[in-house]
Every structure is written in structure tokens, then in C-alpha cells.
Image 1 (cartoon, rainbow, N blue to C red):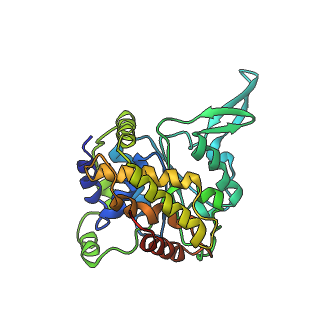
Image 2 (tube, rainbow, N blue to C red):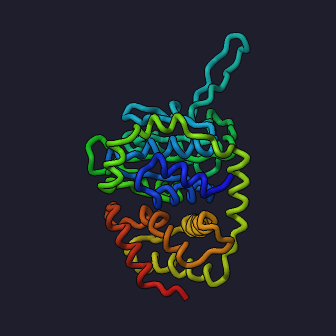
Image 3 (spheres, one colour):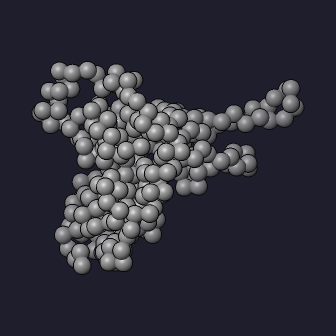
Length: 300
């Protein structure tokens, strides 16, 4: 699959959000899970569906509500009279790309049902482990926490998401195109599958082969250390540091380069670190802190 063709197809459906589209693909090709936070109606679900169809992945969507149970996500064991034993009925998590729509509208206990799936690519039900498909990605959308009927995602859950993006309001030109053209949801139905599961796994191998020099690794480490010393928070975890490195590799590949440069690190830094560095739970504070760290930490 040609990555430029993939980006072009997605940009034909998601108007005026080329950088967010690029970051989304970088996240998924790095093997990470993606959190999209924004107001309702900004195109979060549309983006997830367009990515799944373009990559040719099996796709399922869960609409999270306040009365959901963990079994609604993972599945449940049901007694079979014919077999005289319990039979496991897999839940919607058994797919290649899972859209967890409005994930913060359900109780934290239900949110936590995804923790094992996101980290270990498996689930445990009634003491038995079940492997998830490969690849397995979670794309979750959430509304701002100040809206009514939402539950704040715990830090352990947030740290499972490699990157967070926000789409925001479209530009005047993009919104006029939206009003004048076809409905993006209808355009999704006509999108061609440019790849499949094997193709995605192949691209992930290519991402892993993107060279990260010792100088770039030291730059990454300075950013990580600064986040722990200057942010007023616990800072970035080792998991976050690895996510930052992989995201920079994927971003470099999307830029048609086989090595990472500082620009790649800076392009993905806020998306990787912002939701992990929120002193008072404020997204804007996290983004501002990322901008300050980038300005204060020397590249070389």
C-alpha cells in the first residue's frame, strides 16, 4: 500500500484536517491506540470509520452508555445444554479495529474492561485467556469532561492510549465544502480498501526499521526527563517514552524518510504527551506544557 494514496483518500473525506489524519495513521502504524477528544459532531466517528475501511480492517463499534457492563465489551460465558458446559460468546472487542465511541460516558469500572485488551492484546473471562486478532487497535472518542454525563478517564486508562488528538472546528473553506458537497458518512461507503491486515502488519515492520540515531534518542530522553522535573506532574512513563519513539518513526515514514529527525519528534510530542501531562485535568494545560517543554529542551 502506498501511504500517500492512503492519506489522500482520507483527506478526501475528512475535510481540512490533514495533520490530524497524518497523526492518526502514525499512531496506528506505530501499533498504538488512539484517543480522539472533541465536542460532539466534529467527525470523530467519521474519521475512525474512514481509517478502518481504507485499511481494510474488520471494524466494530461500541456506543458507550452509563448502564454498560464489562461483559458487553468482552463477552460472556453461557451455559450450553447440548455441550453440558459453559460456552464463551465473544464480545465486540474481538475485532481488528474497535471504535469505543464516547468512552467517557460509561462508568470507570466498564472503561477498565479494556485495559488488558489494550496492553496485552488479550482478555480474561472466567479465568480463561482469549487472544485478540492481530492487528488490534482501539480508537476511542470522548467528549470534553466538563460536559454532563461524562466520567473522567483514570490515568491508567489514559496511559494506554499512545496518542490523543482533537479535530476542532473546520476552517471556513472546509465547512463550506462540507455544506456544499456530499455527506462524508455517505462517502465512506464508497472508500476502497487500500490494504488488509497483512498489509498493515507489513507497514508496522517498516516503521520499526526507521532509523533512530543516538542523538535523537538523547533528545527524546531529555524531553522525557524534563517532563518529570519541570511539569509539576509525575511526568512521562517509560511506556510513554517508547510510544513517543515509535510515533516519531511512523511520522517519519509517512514523510517518506527512513530516519527520524527532530521535526518528527516535535510533530508528535503533544499528541503523545499532552494527555499524560495534565496537572489539573485540563487538555489545554497539557498542550501548553508540551509547547513549553519543546521550547526549553535543546535539540542537540
